Image 1: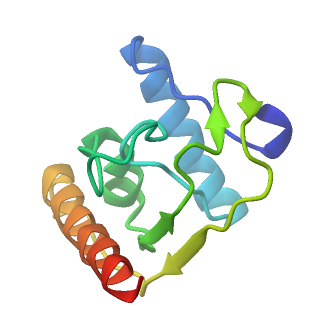
Image 2: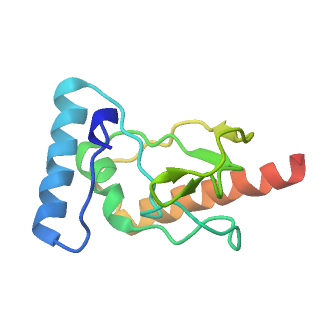
Length: 131
């Protein structure tokens, strides 16, 4: 994961998680980079829900640094990863990129999470209609 620039967030250790988020904020601000976050906290292994429950902590960066969030919905990726191995190398997936959503630090993390999750559900439902 580290070779791809990924940042592992250990949610079991609050102090470490906060330090990781603080470092991510510094990177976004100082290096003017974008980061990709899975707000569900993990990849889904089964296709029983369109979108899992969002963790509010990942929206700390948007709230603190007043950065836009670009909702990206990935369809068809369930089952590609099985543990640490690639399960299916040749599988079609669809990536839907929506318009950025702007926030400022007056928004509560839970509110940001709800707005983004609603948008993601909208994208998921549109994806189902297209298929």
